[in-house]
Image (tube, rainbow, N blue to C red; front, top):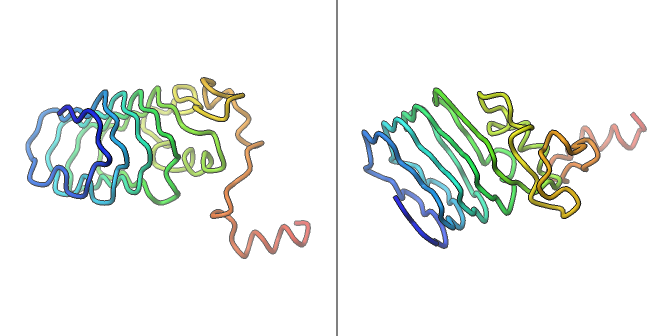
Length: 168
């Protein structure tokens, strides 16, 4: 499928598509991946999301009901790291996340700790890159001192806020 430039992948974009050998979304400006964009897609051997510009991800929910065997996210430029909990990937036999560019901002922690960072190939940090800020543009995530990047306020809970006030 060639989408060219879209304002978004809308809810239920792929509803009714089933028993597909390969679905390739590539070389496009996908805009925003909206909630439920992949709902209704089922029995796909290979879902390839290659070399796209993605403005934002409201939800990327791939579940057992999708029956996707292989999910490959390669060469994409994400202008915004998805918020924690926005990406759910379950029931996929092979997940490959390589050569993507992400902002190395406060959300990079949730990216690395989330389903994309825990990709089954195990080389997420060495094969994905920073798109921003400028001083780390093009650097592999493994080459950036992630610990020096502050966490977003959305990760601050009353428990860890109280412990930081107490000097713990």
